[in-house]
Amino acid sequence: LYAVAMGVDALMALAIGKIYDKRGLASLAIIRILTVCIPPLVFSKNFSLALIAIFLWGAVMGAHETIMRAALADLIPLERRGFAYGIFNTLYGVSWLFGGVVMGLLYEVSLGWLILFGATMEIACLPAFFLLRRKLS
Image 1 (cartoon, one colour):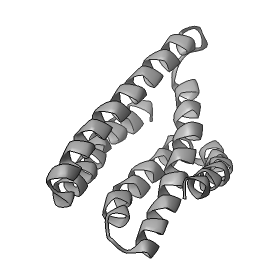
Image 2: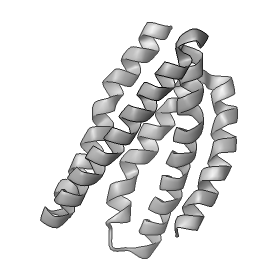
Image 3: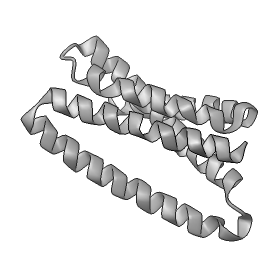
Image 4: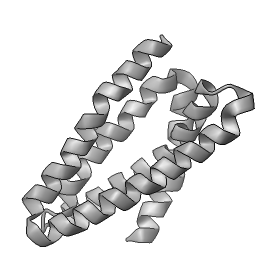
């Protein structure tokens, strides 16, 4: 299943990169939309829905690996870009660690709480996304 997700990742990277070139930062919204769907599907106890979640996860990873970094290049002046990528990747890694630990603990307690946490974190990012878009417009 991991190989399937990575295949989707590769295909999505090409597609979302092209979309980013045409739409710019607005294409980042696809990450939030797809990500919020993953936890309820993957924990649904239905193989078909879990498989859809694997496809979505691959798509999200392809988008992250492509347009998140492309957006940084568009937002940050060249002379500060290396440091900005360092900050981005550090925060990205720490966030993955924190999210993974919390979701692992919640998995032991309740799938409902785990799904709620995942969805809430995604939705909580929306105001920052829209604020960034407005400031850049």
